[in-house]
Image (cartoon, rainbow, N blue to C red; front, side):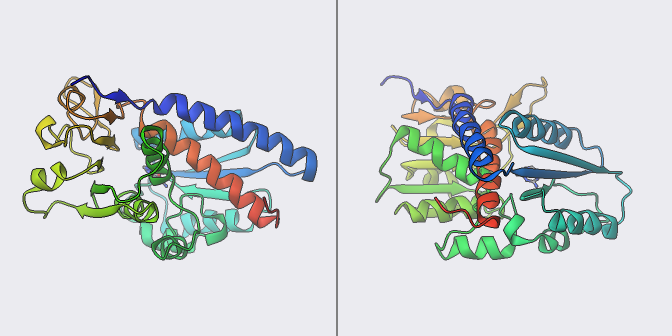
Length: 288
Ligand code: GUN
């Protein structure tokens, strides 16, 4: 069998941003509004710094008003909540997020609960999660949206397919499963306590790996021809970025597969911008 098609997230994200930049120009021309996004970074986590910089750069490139706030790693929870309150009340900010993880003295749940759901760019607030769980829209988290777009590059109609999502996080595993249910897939959520994980994975026409364990998914876990989406990104011993899937093995078996880096990561940022654009229109009562 021939090698898998590589699903190029970098190229897809670039085309999403080009389209969005056009929509931003149109919104400004018709309504005099520039979408505003804000990011709060607490502390100096190196990976978070890289992500926050990438988000700010992408936002500015598509013509958003982009704000970055920083607090030291020693910040108290009430200082973080104060910034959230500032963003909630700032009419120039239409969507924002607090970069995770947070220092241990700050409870992420309390922080997320304080975000106005109508400005929740990440879609992590319980109101948006609840709307998503009931298939009633709301803001879907950016990474799952990106995952779905990448799957649809490989195949547009997903109805009736077996999907296995490895990982049950609030940010990725669960909302990805919800989106796939919305596409009429039969969905299994597997996790660290799942028995015979390799056998479960081998059932999948669509396999999404979101566990954060380097190259855990081996080639023989994959059904021939499957669509494989790798959400993981960890730095190996040789400082190389690797995903949750053993790529070189998997690409011999899969029908389509995302690379790491250059797969899901760029799509997460593009979808975050799309979320913020949609929130901006909602907040201004603009339809269509
Ligand atoms: N840290 C890693 N990914 C994310 C994300 O998508 N949103 C936030 N807020 N923090 C993150």
